[in-house]
Structures are given as structure tokens and as C-alpha cells.
Amino acid sequence: MSPIISLQISDDLLERFEHVRNRSGFSSKSQALREAIVKFIEEYEELENFEGYRIMTIHLVYPFREVIINEIAELYSQYHQIIKNVSDWRIADKKIETILAVGKFGLIRDLRDKLSNIKDVISSMHEVVID
Image (cartoon, rainbow, N blue to C red; front, top):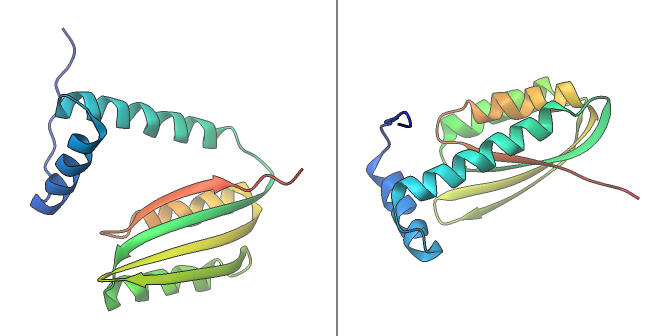
């Protein structure tokens, strides 16, 4: 028998999850969560193998709140040596940012991890491949 896990999420997050799950054709919450867990693991396993100098984009989505903006600005100040550009948009009550980071992958990953640890910030990171 497979282990069972449980988690608590906000009503808003559950509503958003159910909306996407229904539109995506998943027959159950478990099926959708299993796929999300696999993608999460694959993304992090891929990033663990990176080393050296990289060009990465970090994407953030978060509620437009001063406390969050201040925390992010503090991190931008701490990591200014690898941040080359920040683009942002405000859509309704959300802020969307794209950060272009260039430097040692360990520093870029640390920045992304610290941004991800800010409450209500959703992030993703992708390598920019230049041929």
C-alpha cells in the first residue's frame, strides 16, 4: 500500500487548484497532485546537476503588498552582483516579475530559494540557453 500524505492549504489555493484540475482533465485531486509532485522533483533534480556560470531567469508571482515588495527589494540588494535586469508587471492585485540573473549557479539558486521562502511568493527558474 502506498503512503498517504495530507496537507493544509488556504481556501483560495484549493479553489484555484480545483479550477485548474477540472480544466486539465484530471479525474481526481490525487492524480493531479501526483503529477505535480513528479514535475517538482524533476525540476529540482535537474537544477541540482547545474554548476558553474549560468544565465537564468527567475519568475515571480505574488500579491501586491508592501511587506512582500520590501522583502524582495532587500534580496535584490543583497544579490545585485548577479541580477542584470528585473521586469515587472502588475495585473489586478498580483505582481509578476522576471529576473535575469547571470553568475555562479549556486548564487542564483540561493537567490531563487530565498525568494521562494517569502510567504505568498510563487517562483520558477529556467536556464537561458545561448547557442
